Amino acid sequence: MKNLVAAAAVILSLLLSAGCSSQAGGQSEDGKIKIIAAHNQTSPDNPYQFGMKEFKRVVEEKSNGEIEVEVHAGTLGTAESQLIEKLKLGGADLVLVSPGFMAQTGIREIDLFAMPYMFEDYEHWLQVVDGEIGEEVAQTINEKSDNDFKLMGYWSAGVRHYYGEKPLETMEDIDGLTFRTQTSGAIADYWEQTGAIPTNVAWGELYQALQQGVVDSSENSYPYFVQQNHHKTKNGKYITETGHDYTTRFLLMNGNTFDSYTEEQQQIILEGAEAATKEERKVDSEQSEEYKQKAVDEGAEVNQIDRQPFIDIAKPIHEKTAKEIKAVDLLKKIRSLAGE
Figure (spheres, rainbow, N blue to C red):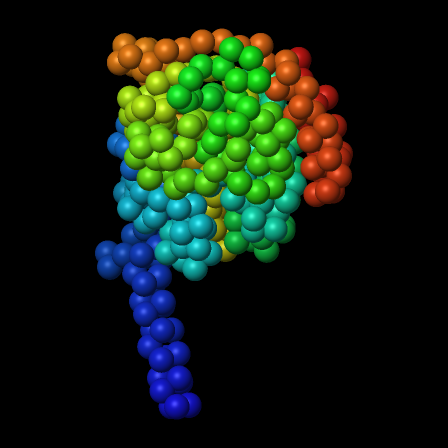
């Protein structure tokens, strides 16, 4: 039995090393550096894909082809846990993940970036991520991950809104609706306090769940749910612009891999990440209007709502969460930039 266990361990080790060494973080047969870049969206029109392709263009152009970038749109995994695992083990070099998932790795401070109504508008979000707070959070991510994660840019995933089986005229209309969102933690607590019933459905299964009435409603930004045709489902036709989340995504690189490059190569990669961030944000902004119009043209109905009752519920939860995760100072800094 001991021999069998030892043999199995050796085989597993060989499989893992083979799976990682040939994929990322090293040189190809012709001596070029190869960078594996991945995100979890499968649509070729998704803003993430535009950003990653811009990273590829800039890096390959500035390195005269000495650095090759291979972009994967959902093909390395549609779950963020898969992407993070590959980043840590060397199966990917550059990935895009959400604050909610990153908080699960033990970096709790960034939970604040996923809280409903943390940012009052897009300009407020920009002031936070592109200023001193963004730099501070980037340093925290790097230090607490022991250099497994190096933040290369803050990407936007648009402004998230409600969509469901009926429009919301007041906050009371969401009472009792099953609502696809996080089912634990502060975000779930927030939606429970609005009266909704947080429900867990995988993104790839959400179209069917809305169509078949498994869930009454969901939330996301226009490019993401319209590209998946959620607005054409039985329970996705009515869109209420709650504007509850100016959504942040973290572009992460394996810090150890980054450190292994020469200074010149590092500078090229940093320039590529900066260009990619600008491109992704631009496309995301353009697509928000484009896909809103597409949804309306294809039969969806859009309405506005008084957001203040939703905001009033959110603020005490922000404060409670900040205390729990020891991020009270961070919350104060974020709030201090509102209205600038």
